[in-house]
Length: 462
Ligand SMILES: Cc1ncc(COP(=O)(O)O)c(C=O)c1O
Image 1 (cartoon, rainbow, N blue to C red):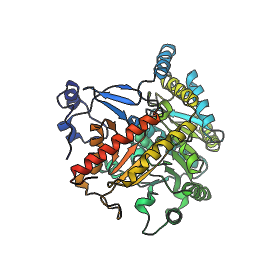
Image 2 (cartoon, protein in one colour):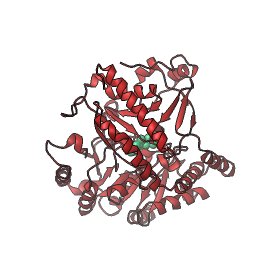
Image 3 (tube, rainbow, N blue to C red):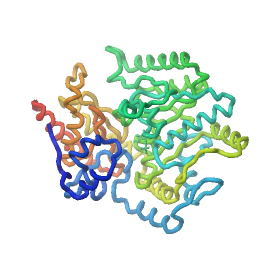
Image 4 (cartoon, rainbow, N blue to C red):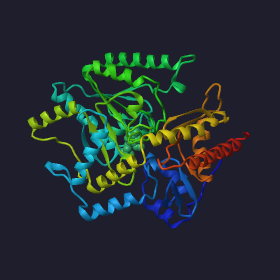
């Protein structure tokens, strides 16, 4: 098996192991292998403390959409630090840039009469949507409407509610989660969950019929909302069947259940549209955005609320004398200034059409990998791609978990100078929007070399 010992002896590595409790990391293994210390960034590349350069094929965590050295974003932050480094949004206060960002996001949002609530992380934006869904139904005389429908393999964050909504067992095991109140439904992944001989359309229709039955058995009067990513990122970049979300939306409407779109990965152009729900043919009642909103340069997120939901919240807050929700750093002016600049740059780059074009280049470059003996499926939209590693292409059998094949590919890719992410046996790519066609070719070549290395290391030759 391939191993990497790169940072073990560095001073930063030692400090990190001694003092830093990492996010989403095997803490015990970390004590043995230490961190990959990234020292600096340059365009689509990051450079580690030993000077090794990597193509950042994941934009960090699907977020550094303008790469790692955009001076305009740096300047926007610098300027705002000088003008007003902090202000808040409680009790009718606002900074100028925050109001302007709300306008920009609302206008882009493709939701009628939208209003924008700011937070700092994707998890907070999702939590905020759930609280607002509860508030909406309470205000309309349905306080028992509390449950939320969410997919297996969906990922919605690490806060108590974010993890509860997530359909990934590793988010739950240590913590006695999920909390009660989630209606978990099948992951809409035809390749994995379709029955033998079942077409994608039949699969979709079966899931919709199941959802209808589930709503009836749980009682629509107990259900507040449905949440989904348009394309499920951390679950393995899963693209639901055509027409799936439109059928879901029709069902939800009949039962007065709000539709929440988690656009934290998809939002702001990654899919070749401004938002993933536009690719998928539905208009949510609320959507959560983060990541590309500030190109990852500042921690900022938002929940965009449709006018019809907002009206109810406004009336309720008049009755209760306040909207009892919000964060110290909601609408932080430096984050807002950076986000405004990022949106300017996206528009100057010709997004979202630019990403549609680059997405075509990416998927054309990846499609030959379908012939690779390790790859069962290549999927995705725009600058978002997933590859499924299989032991047998015909039966779609998984590799034994003990082989950790996905982690092996991730490590082999790093040795080739490419950062990808493995989620179990799926490999994700979500490169910065600034990637060029030549850099896409280089990225795919490095990935192919990594797959070949792993294939050889498990005793076979491509
Ligand atoms: C789809 C989705 N939702 C929510 C989150 C949580 O965002 P954060 O880590 O900023 O809380 C993520 C993070 O990757 C995500 O991909």
